Length: 121
Image (cartoon, rainbow, N blue to C red; front, top):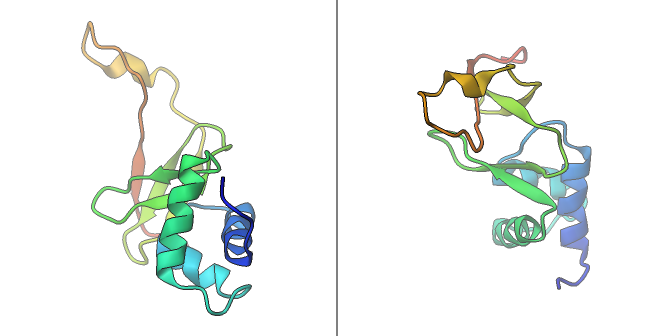
């Protein structure tokens, strides 16, 4: 069990406020507004702990570093901006996507990434 700290509270708060998956450096930048001396090593340790406890989950972005998001979100997919590198949630899922697999295959999970340019870029 992890003890409650200002750093941990700040990092959890970042995910409560976030509307999209965040890379560790984004978590650091956001959390430093609450805890100015926060370092990247503490962010990585806390992310690992929050994943193990089930508060957040990793999002493996092909060709990029892992991002993280709250684990209580409904099933959805992601958009990766090729200009700024940010990852955004895409709500919903294509109906019948599991039917695309070859005969005899069983889909256990799936992830779809869209790539392009976000409105800010």
